[in-house]
Image 1 (cartoon, rainbow, N blue to C red):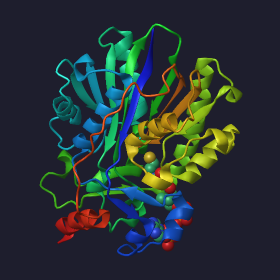
Image 2 (cartoon, rainbow, N blue to C red; image 1 turned 90 degrees about the vertical axis):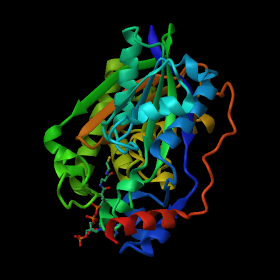
Image 3 (spheres, rainbow, N blue to C red; image 1 turned 180 degrees about the vertical axis):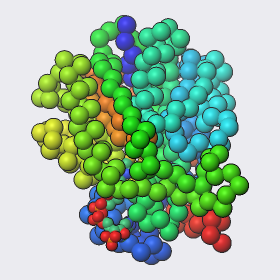
Image 4 (cartoon, protein in one colour; image 1 turned 120 degrees about the vertical axis):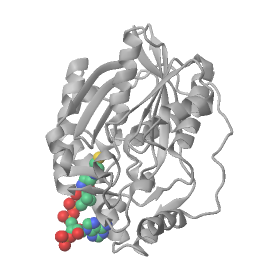
Length: 352
Ligand SMILES: CC(C)(COP(=O)(O)OP(=O)(O)OC[C@H]1O[C@@H](n2cnc3c(N)ncnc32)[C@H](O)[C@@H]1OP(=O)(O)O)[C@@H](O)C(=O)NCCC(=O)NCCS
């Protein structure tokens, strides 16, 4: 008995913010952002996190050929839920009509999807669930302060989803590796949100020691891949595709060089979306399958690092399904606002 992925989908909100758009209001430049991170543009959402999550989830269900009522559990990996209470997963359950599913969120920062995959695996292994919808979804633009330029230029919004199902074959999750170091949590935090700030005039922003995060991300992501494939009994040469968390092309390149793998087998799309936190891996996975990077039997490694600090990796053998069972035409509601108008409306509410 194993747990495998049988459906995939993504939801990218339509409004775009380019580096040049940001450079018009923030003291930065396309050259700085591109050379330091590889990011060229990102999308910002005009709808709630759970709206993106629900649409990505419905697309994954359709790809798997399942109905919402087939789901036993919905996990949303996010750190930017619509509300603190209830979970984003509760809203997603209602929005897709998955009446038989339990629902909860998981917050492991940018490592949320890998933690969620491990949780889905556990639910299936214990017989608690047979079919799990796992969504990574973030509306992180809502937490950004454009005056905090070192983080405001790095993040974007979006959602990706997979269906994790019980499988009686050897395909699917071959190993999981998870880790955390709460003593390093200070290096990446959101201020102004949470019980700690009640009664305070705290500014809402994401603040980060970029160099500290960079150093730890390179070390922990490389070590996690080595450990995860070792647990699966694979050598580096066995890997067909690495799908890393999409935070920064320089982190991905440094990990790649340490592992001595070719850039031809490392999936990168951060130039289009920026860092969508827990959503980067499921968005990348959906694109990798749809663009033919993944074939039946492909040996894939997922690896991430994020706030917490947290890290994780999984060695995964893809099953037979490389084409969706079916697709849906639904889209998010249209908006007349540009990406910058959405960001500036929030910024004015923040600072007047
Ligand atoms: C944030 C990051 C891109 C900065 O890159 P870096 O190479 O460390 O930056 P540098 O040291 O070359 O430059 C820092 C300088 O750029 C400035 N700077 C910061 N943000 C800037 C921006 N958006 N535009 C222009 N300049 C900026 C800083 O003020 C600093 O200036 P100073 O030297 O005068 O004090 C990098 O550290 C990083 O990617 N870290 C990991 C971030 C991440 O991925 N986080 C999420 C993990 S899940």
